[in-house]
Image 1 (cartoon, protein in one colour):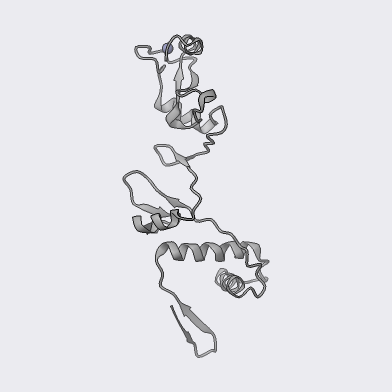
Image 2: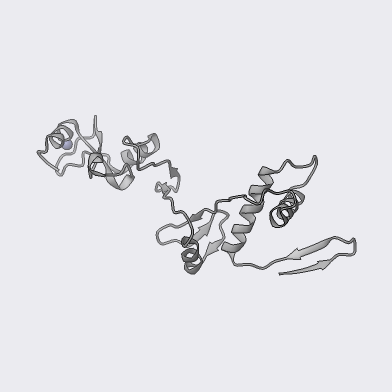
Length: 184
Ligand SMILES: [Zn+2]
């Protein structure tokens, strides 16, 4: 980190940081920008500079800004910050120490699915993906494709989550048979 005084008296601060550290700082700054009431006509650069001052000096900031850093971990692909900056495995591991991990499911087109494992019925978007993934009744040998019902592979009442990997579709007869315990 370095700083120099410019001919006009202003000071330029330059910092070179690992991406996950930079992301933490920029996230706090932008959170503070949203919390501040920007002066009329202030550029985003100026608002960010004001926010940086506020959060680092407690001058007029509340000093308790909490920002969220979202990292995208996708099977087989590089781990990325939300803006596309790649992160090393080491950086991800260090973030996990005090991070709160929440799972966000994406479909095959990388559209997020608002999945809440705690709700019993799949969301509309989940149902759409399941319809694509499982066009037929999940019972082996049954190829019914109409009037399929959503089913938790591990029953919801038995701790099964409402997530894509635990959801499938069964035809009416097989769903009722499963309800009676006749088949898996
Ligand atoms: Zn069936």
